Image (tube, rainbow, N blue to C red):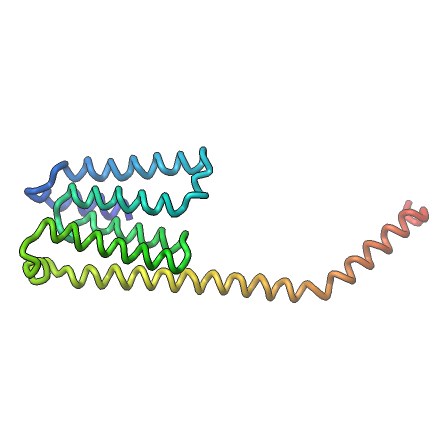
Length: 185
């Protein structure tokens, strides 16, 4: 996904309102991710998944704001955040996170474009918001169904091996008894 954003950034000229060059924003995001990964491994940051998700939201929102281009290539970073939230947060938190992303996108794009009717007519914000909703709900549902299927497979495997436990214990007891009687050479 980062590669796709990189290619799109190189192909599109920077908008006139951009506060930083696009390549600098992309390197800022990559640097943030590298630092985040290092902190996760060193400080057991994985215990703070929600804090990481909120920090991601602020970083991505800031980068999107600095790019100053509604629906530009950095919009894809919101999809990455939604996918990450769906994979790591509960269903409720993932859907709330998707709603927060939608709110941030609307606020940022209203800041860039006025009046709001231009945002709908010219920039098609409704289609981008629909894509965010569909991806947030869709990824959450798919990942949760996969998790439930995985749990069901674990339960099924546990039930299949349950009858074998008494046989294994009997075999171990017989082996131990034979070993203590000197039956094994």
